Amino acid sequence: MYILRYMKQILLELDDASAADLERVAPAGKRVRAEFIRLALRRAIDLALDRATEQAYRQAPLPIGLSPADLSGWDPHNRLAKPATRSGRSRRARKRVA
Image 1: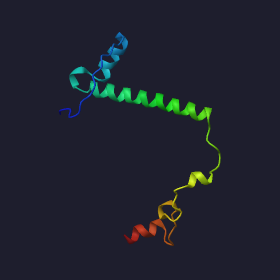
Image 2: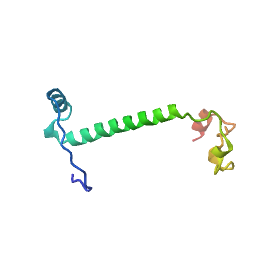
Image 3: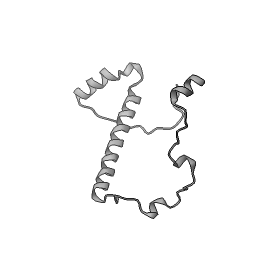
Image 4: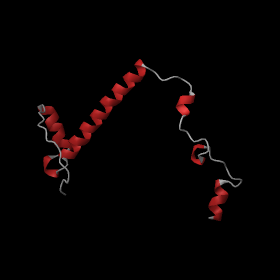
């Protein structure tokens, strides 16, 4: 499988224990190591960004209720925005008919 998009390369230094653990979970010969590291790095970045977002909301929380500005652009006639209505037949009855 060839990489069709350019990716930046980085040099990463690991302590012996981390290198040994990496070798156990993503051996170099299996060609999964790079993807494992990319996924682990992506997860760490996402968690850090989530923490930053959480901190921002703690410093400036959202108001409790909805204001008219929150609903601007909302289509009240959108059938997908309304709760589903139940038909007179039960789920079991529909299965038997089908």
